[in-house]
Amino acid sequence: MATKIETLPSDHIEISPLKETDIDQFNLILEAHVRDRITGEVLTSEIKEIKGYMRGELDEYGRERHYFVARDKMGKVLGCMAYSIPDPDTIKHFQVDNPNENIELLNAFVSPEIFRGGGIGNKLLQKIISEGKRLGKKQLLINSGPRYQKSWGFYDKFAEQADFIQNKYGEGGHAKTWKIALQ
Image (cartoon, rainbow, N blue to C red; front, side):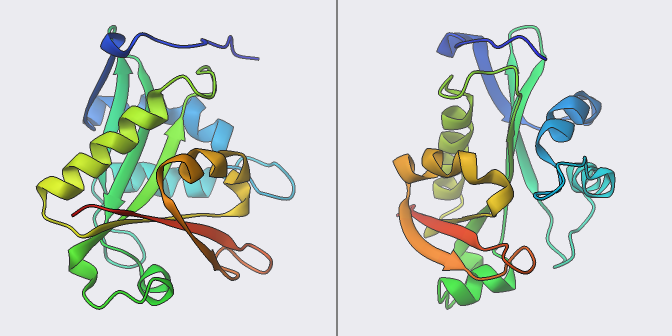
């Protein structure tokens, strides 16, 4: 089991756009999080997809994902978050008139070595929020499936809850949703 780091001082964490050299550092982080919600098995095909998105491949909705990465002072990757235009389920759920006026949070992962509450997720989310504001977007829309239920409390602290997208991630895979006003 990985050693837990309780917290890192804020000035020891750098948030910046993803670099190609960061991608392979995500292996252990993704393997810790991207698992079947029932069996716990590592989903290698989904990890490969995520790494493809990190390299600029378009997702199943034709979206490009834009990643920010948290690194320590030595350049070690600690986590990431991405954003893009909302997917069709999110657009319908939030009754969005113009999808291009909103962004959706995607691929939020923090190293299992980092203690929950250590500030990495908060710094990444604040960067996504500031980027959305810089781009003139109205809202940051978020959904999270049952695989990541332990992280739902994190979003509860920062965002307005907005019910569930039923069966978003397969039968019984309801996604809890939130939104954050950017204007």
